[in-house]
Amino acid sequence: MFDLESLSLNELKKLARDVQKAIDTYQERERLAALTELEALAHEKGFTLSELAPLAAKRKAKSGLPPKYFNPENPSQTWSGRGRRPKWLEAALESGKSLEDFKLRA
Image (tube, rainbow, N blue to C red; front, top):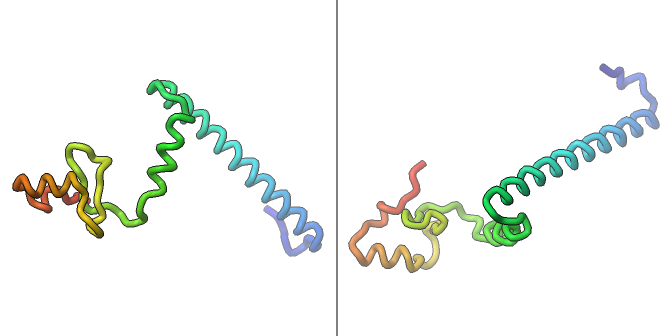
């Protein structure tokens, strides 16, 4: 496409700025398109995006360890296998279930 070897330093720098500007503009268009899609989906489910955003931020703030176990009755409740066992898991184990019953399957 371009013979970059024939361009001067100033032309290369201008080209780099133009490419970065094109990348930034493309990413902003993609962000706006994603936001529009998310707003439509939230509205379809009866929510506003601002109602859901705090939930997403809270979910992201959780531990960086991947979950190894989950609660079949509420799959959003997980445990990495480290630290203290959650109450839902303790109750299930006391009722005779096995830890293996709650293991995530790949």
